[in-house]
Image 1 (cartoon, chains in turn cyan, orange):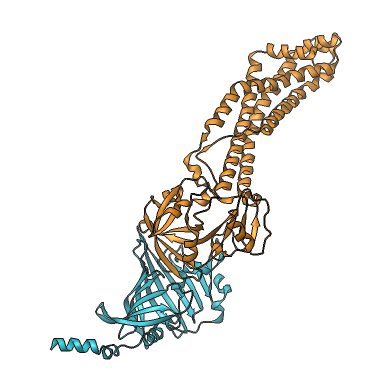
Image 2: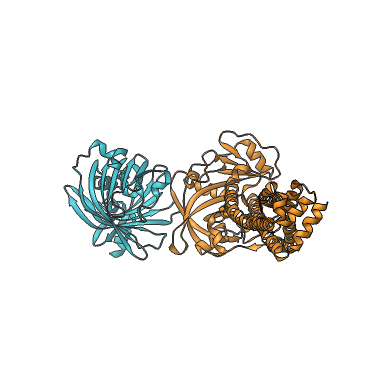
Length: 246
Length: 392
C-alpha cells in the first residue's frame, strides 16, 4: 500500500503543489500587510554590541516607497537627530551645537545606522516586494509553531542590495517570519526574524524583529514597533528639508 | 691687516668668555643644520617612496575621483581612452581600479578600499607579482604590514570580503592573504587590499575600467586630457607632503630663533662688556691717531670672529656627528606611523650645500650685526674722556 502511495506521489506530484499559492500571490499578500501608502510609527531599536546594548527610540513617517522622515527621541545623545529620505537621497540632521545637515546617497544608504545591523535602506524601506523580486515557493516548514511557506526570491531588477532572499511566510498571516538575504555569490549576509506580531485592522504587522549581520560577530539588532498608524495624514511640509531643522 | 691681527689677538685673549660664546653659537648652527637636514632627508625619502610605490611619474584620475573623499570612488571609474590603453600596452602606464568593501576578520567588520592592480606590472614597487603566482581557489590579496597589524591578518589567512558591484548589489567571498608587503607609504597600506585587476573588474562588473592610471617615471610625452581622465602631475600629487614639510619647517624655525637669540644675546653682552672695560684702550688708540671708524671696525670684527670660530668649532665636533646621522639614520618612534604620510622607520638626514651655506651666511651676518650695534657708542666717544675711563 505504501509503495503504491509513493508511486502515486512520484507520478502525480502536481496536485500536492497546487495547494500552494504562487510566489507572486504570496508576495502580494505580504505587500498588503507591510506596504503602506503612508504611516506614522514609534519604534525602539536595541543594538546589541559586544560589550553592551544601546536602546534608541524614534518616530517615523513614511509616505509611498520614496519618502520617509525619522526623528530620534532617545537616548539624549541621539535625541533631536533627524533623517529625511526623498527618492534615492537621504539627509541626516544633527542638532545644536553642530546644527548640520549631511546628504547621503549611493552606497551610503546601505551603511549601518548608528552601529546597528540595519541600514538606512532597511529603516526606510517601503517597496513592494512584488515589484522587486520573482518568487518561487520551495516548500513548507514549521517555524515557532507556525506553518510557513518557504519562498525563494530572485531579483528581477538591477541594483537591488540583495540578489536573492529566502523567506519563511506565515501561511495564515502572510508575514515573513524569517528571512535570509544573500550575496550574488550565494553567501548568507543578513537574517531577520519576526518574533512577535500584532493585528491592526486587516493587516498583520511585525511587533518585534531581530536583524543580524551574518558576517560579523555582533549579537544583532532588535527592532520593536511600539505603535503604528496607517490612517495618519502626513502634512506636506513633513517631507521637506526645512522640517529637519524644526 | 693690523685690525685683523688685533681682533684675533683680543678675542683669543678673552679666553673662556670667547669659547663659551663660540660653543653656544656652534650649537645653534649645528641644530639648524641638523634639524633642517632631517626634514630635508625625510622629505626626500617620503617623496621617493611615494613616487616609487604609488605616484609614478604622475597619474590620470577619473574626473570624479577625489582622494580626500572616499565616497567618490564608487562612481569614479570608466573605460580608459585609447591614448592611455596604448601606454598600458607598452608598459609605460598601469591602471588601478578602486572600490570600497568590508572585511570581517574574526567577525569584526573593517572597512577597506579594494584596489585592482595588474599583477604583471613593474612600474610601481608594489610586489603585485605575488598575486600572479598564487594558485587556484580563493581570491589572492596583497596587503601592507600596517593593514596586517590593524586587521590582525597573517600570510595565508582567509578572510571574508564583502563589496557591492557597480549597480549596488552586495556580493561576498573569501580572499586569502597571498603576501604582506612592507612599505612606508600609508596610502598603499592602511585599509587597502590589493587584488588582481581583472578579478576586481569581474567582481564589480566593470570590464576594462579604471579609477586612475599611473604613468612611468620615465615617460616624457604625456597624452592630453580627454575630459574623463584628467592628468595630475607630481606637484599636485605631492602637495600634501610639501605642505607638511613647510609646516614642520615653520614650526622648527621657532627653535632656531630661540637658539640664535640666546647665542646672539651672549655675543651682544660680550661686546657691551668689552667696550665698557676697554675705554682706556680705545682712548689710547684714538690718541695714537686711529680713526673712530677703524676702532668700530676692530670691535665689530672681534664680535664677528665669534661666528667664524663657531663655524670652525661646529666643523670639528659637528661634521662627524651629522655624518654619522646621515649614514646610520635616525630611528623614529612607532607613534609617528599614524600621521598619514610616507614615514620610514629610519630617516636619513640630507644636508644640501644650500642648507649649509645658507645657515653659515645667516650666522655670520647676524653675529656681525649684533657685534656692530654696541660699537655705535664709540662714534660719540672723546679721546680725553676715554683715556680717563669715561663715556661721553
